[in-house]
Length: 255
Image (cartoon, rainbow, N blue to C red; front, side, top):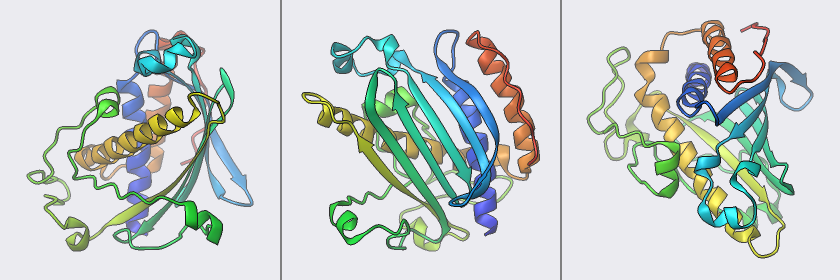
């Protein structure tokens, strides 16, 4: 459980810092809402409502179906560690929806069906393992960012964790896994399947990059409390919205 608490801090810190890195005067991440929530399914957590304006990162083939400045993504996220859910939509394509449900668990990724899928869903499920020590790159890696830290040589000064040598998942302690269930609905004739494949590749690259950053930035976030991270988060969100020419967001910080 300690590892899950650490990861909660790391995840919040990494999302905040990556948003800062990808925001310029005319594109980036705008935060509309950031507040506490509670429901019967996830319990208590943090709700965010964001707009992603990332026109320069849209694949050129997709601009044949829509102008780049119309491909704005809206994301609602419910973060209630160890469970999280996010839903992304694009107003230009109203039938499109990308849903990501995540369960964070201690262990090296050997748990089966943590999302409680039916037999029918399990039959169509495709499982991919993402190793944060991987140096795999593709088109999306270039757009999202490419953390070039060599984890076979990296060692945290503050925690002593690392390096990550072959088979590290079975030797490292503590270790945890983020089990992500990605569901895409893009019912558009002519390009729906291609859009699905592009988004799967993009999400995979994002998962890899963000989690590589979690580990390589460990000496920045390790030892911080959620209260401290939230305070920094509020400052950065206000700065990002100001850079994009949007109203300053006011959030309530409760840890």
